[in-house]
Length: 307
Image (cartoon, rainbow, N blue to C red; front, top):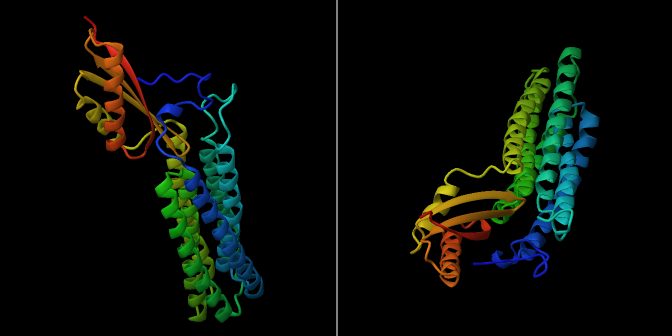
């Protein structure tokens, strides 16, 4: 079995780490950087046209795009902090910094929802006008395309490397694409003679924002409260039980940022030798790693069946 002490390795569970995540981190940073540059340009252009036209739908979309830049910065900081090595004060390392960065993304989503709602209600109550509709519709179209490309890119990377923070940021970008579509519909409505359509579009976008904010917050809270996906423990336990010599297995798991730690307590016959339990542990780790591809660490502990 693996017995890793702090003197042997400054990293917890180093003996059971599966793979090197430096390439994943580089890809994540690339996704963040590219999307931040693109969304900053799109958001500033929409902000200028929103100020010219007076469209609250377009203004809300510009706010969402620019907030994506700030959330990308939060995710980048979280990725950087998660690289810190374990210490006496943080023996498990800093990998959960990514989930904390994801909470910052969630807070920005909720704040943008509140701001969009206030602006939309004010325009409906004050019967504000909207002008330069052609420029506004064109800007919204650019927002739809840009946000869809960015969202799909970040979502693919986030899911592949199991980064809840990057997935949350991708959902924020997807949300912005819906905001752009709502802004476009509102402006088209105004062009068709419905002056209240722009304000109504802003309120509709607020509902979409709240829906995504709830999903993002729920997933992050599950990570931070040591929740795992349905079926994961059952798959790991079944894999461990298939190894010869394992009479019973008790499995625990928790997410630490992008790293899933799976701990297996295996119950063996009391006459099993230390060398034998170590060999069984290696087979269990291989079996669990194959059954649960998300697992970055698999830790084995041997226990004797009560006589």
